[in-house]
Image (cartoon, rainbow, N blue to C red; front, side, top):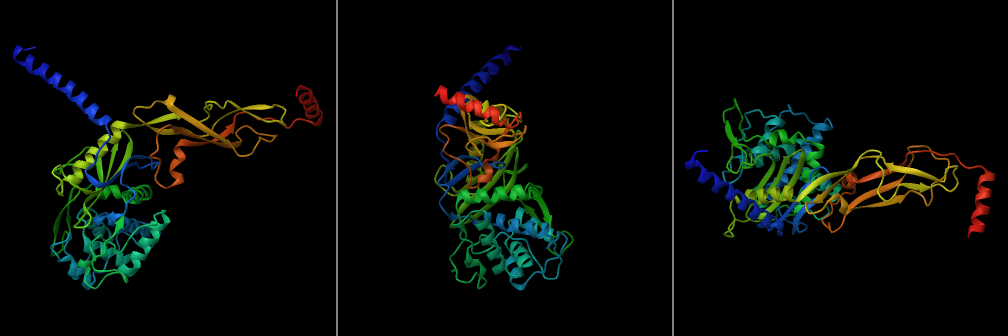
Length: 430
């Protein structure tokens, strides 16, 4: 190697070594996300990787639109709506779209817009008037749409949500068009955990949302009298200011009450996680647009650095500590058992498969003969000690770490002479 290049090369290697050591030391400490609330979860299972004040309800601003977008997708799936349907622009929606204080695209009553057009505007530009136009199209009025939103989050097990409009705006911007019984100062409020639940349901039921949320820039109203260049408020997308590889969604939100919020999602090595950051601040304790992305990036890195998903058992594998079960009335009095399905579990990076325990339970007190091979006789749950973060409030989310216990062999029922002889032997042995 050229001598002039040797010293810089060595210094570079030393820097990288010390940098990795420093990073490992910092990463091993408790993570402090500079936000009022935060959470990171697995999109597939709902496993919680990190949480910070995640159960406290607070302002969520335009991340509200994730609920509205879900209902639009649901209406399309149910055949009540199609992407090509034209959406009428009401007087109030047209007027609101002209408010330059708010995130909007211009909407003219003389032009034609489809559900697809307005959906993209709501996702990319966080267009408030476009969202209300969709709400009116789906439910007939925003008031009825809000009632649908409230019912939907309740169906997801979210019981403390405050939903007053479809957009996340403060009611003060909506004039007299506010939900009955709410005030001009009211805004939507959910917890970070609730928002993670919303995002997870949206991604699981309608993964096509990512085809829109990953678009960095697009022209709205092409061919109309008022075309508009949209740039995604999610600056973590490719080519934008806070670009991060693997990020393809999901929704920002900002109001005076909520501060800078962001529901993000990233896929890395085949694993997708969801992050929520509410009311983020920078290192000078100042709210700014980039703080939410800085804190989200930290949270995403922390999650992938500190958690790993392990395949513990595959189909028909034997269960540790449960090789067989008793069948007192069978010709064979014990039968080998196995897991029916693959069992996976997220483990903290400082844990190994040796730290995993298995909790088994049988459907009945004892297995009754006759029994066929492949009979479901119980359930086994894999778990790791000292992991108290758990899952989102959804029992179904734990399914990857559960499996039915099945018999791998069968047996007929023993005849009366065999069972009598066994009872006599047991009597004298006892």
